[in-house]
Image (cartoon, rainbow, N blue to C red; front, side, top):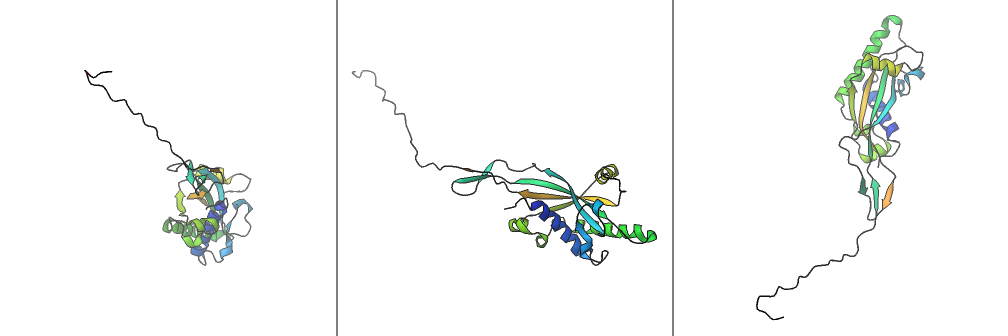
Length: 200
């Protein structure tokens, strides 16, 4: 059962994947890759920030399913999560751009190599469910990135968008159903037709 914690579990799974593949090179310390807003960043070198959640209804079965003999539950809802991945560098000015490009390049390489997040990075309800969380680099225009980024006065930093798909959250809404115990079958028995010449 995937609980409401699925969103943070999916975000943490993405962070752990990046930590495993981007350290110790080009990022020296695992803790410098964090699940947080890029606007509040102080010491991190790579931030992962959930900025949009949308329900994915394509191909999803609706209605109730059987949980037990007398209980039915609404089927899980499936969501797409969009994360903004942003690089931050404290390198000297003449080295800063190259530092940013290395981090972003390594992150892009990781996403291409892992179209589905490995089970070992999952935790909590996603791990219990054996969820198959997909990773896609989303094509995002510079205008869109600036709109996502510029919700305050801080200047834009090199970023890209990752789409996590197949994230499900189970419903808690249930209903009790009663089983059929008796069946009554009625048949219409037609009267036999009389032959001509037969008496009444």
